[in-house]
Image 1 (cartoon, rainbow, N blue to C red):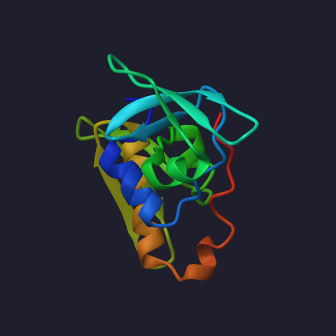
Image 2: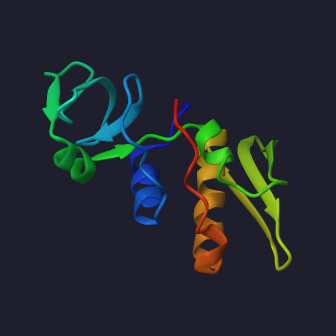
Length: 140
């Protein structure tokens, strides 16, 4: 999968990862369905395309409450400190980063998931100030 799972996306949002202003063709999770933002209107309404289901329209407030960015590897990598390594480890996708205190290695079914898990580990173990400027990456 090129984007985070629903559960990981929710954890990232709850951990404070920024949710960029929606743009056309951005992937988001809504109602546990991976959706595509098809249109963002001048009045702030947002249309989503859901696979195999009726398309839905959100107001900006509804979107903020009910939709969650489905970040891809590029988005998450921009938020990680320099020096992280993506590699296959023991037959699984892995992301590893060494800090002054420890080495963090996560393993998952995709590099995106592994990198997201490193982000969450760093966020959980770091002082808030270390992440105050993170989350400004642009999702294409």
